[in-house]
Length: 373
Image (cartoon, rainbow, N blue to C red; front, side, top):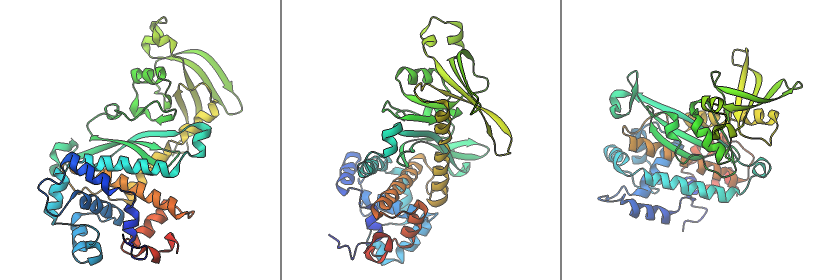
């Protein structure tokens, strides 16, 4: 075992990754079949190193590796062509399962957040895309000579981490990207208009899964109750949703009474706009529902953060498997940084943690103030 005096910051960063579990995944997926030097664990470590160091290409990673003995002690790294081949061929599910293991480690580390005890866990679902020239990834062609891949994220606002992810070519519509994303776990789910599907809303309603989402202006509704809060200028109405519910009042659709919360907000142009929210939550006041929905912008901040500070906008592979490996590596790195931040017990931002780690990746832990003496 490496003593703390000799332990590198990078080794401390990846410590939550269980080598035994990686070996199990390696055997399960035969991911080291016909592999001589670039084993699965080296692959995982090298992709995390690339993410945290913010190298934008495999060329940069390999060039630095060749000239840095201390980096060579951390993992094996072959030629660029061999790395590219492994990114395209090694089963991405090894990285996906590693992400899930790290997520479980994080949850055990953090425990139940105080906010969870009061409101229940708050989770936000949204998707984002990454583009590249279509000629580099023709099988992922989307439009306008661009190839694109979409990843649909469930972001746990309460704990500040991405909890689930589904990755698809961008031509797949949002509603086809939500398999196994939302479950009945007592959480409050927030999502935008891209997930409009009345049948799906009915399923959520019937399973008592709480949600808040914007209501389209052309939504067909029948009002059956109204409450007005003059203090907040908020209209809170009971509605039946969809043409079937309105026409066939004796069907199951009629038994689903939603709430429509209408209020006025200001857009980026400083213009007043009317916002209509749909929810099935009955036990929370309209003001709190509006507050909860406004939390949804947090996932936009998360997408912006990982695109700015991790290697995710620059593709290092040109097929779907390679891109999934890159995305899962970014998410693993994000959670590892969160864990490191918690363990440091310092009241600092994720960005500062990232900068400290990035600058000192190959330094000994004892020489970096973030980790104490």
